Image (cartoon, rainbow, N blue to C red; front, side, top):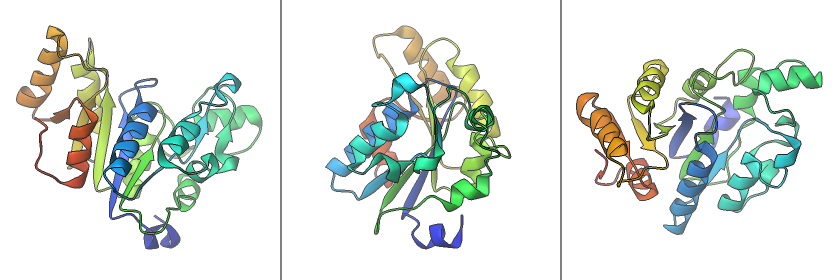
Length: 223
């Protein structure tokens, strides 16, 4: 991180990545942020860059996170990093004729409110989705040297494969797999979680309280 960003680094920095696009990263990040703040934790979220369809205005990722964190959308994602083209950010800027996005620039633009205890940084797409011209989401998160990495996954068919492929490219000694949209009444969902936890040895969670406890280092309820 840049010197300026490092000076104001949160006590706990969490990188949030997904196994794919539309897996629920923003919803998960917003719920975690809201829950932490309800606990009295000084928490904030950042989306270094976002691309979107014009129809999403009013519900872009940055706006969703700003509502959860009580900040302005442009605090969450700098105004010049809003790209109204539904493609990966480096592809979107090419369509818009805006040149290249360099990872070091995005890292240097991450600023936190004073005394932020937990900082959440949400990436784009899946772990191998282009975040900038020189990094994908996994590589970008690694540049932040996060204390924790939260991997958001689905709970249904294909979950084990997508989690395994994603974990393999993450430098994540402290990684939690969050099974979004988990239904304990589904035999498949239960078996997927059990396989990931018991056979693969991954810490898993299925509700936001579990995620918050893991972030804060409380007695783990995760498997």
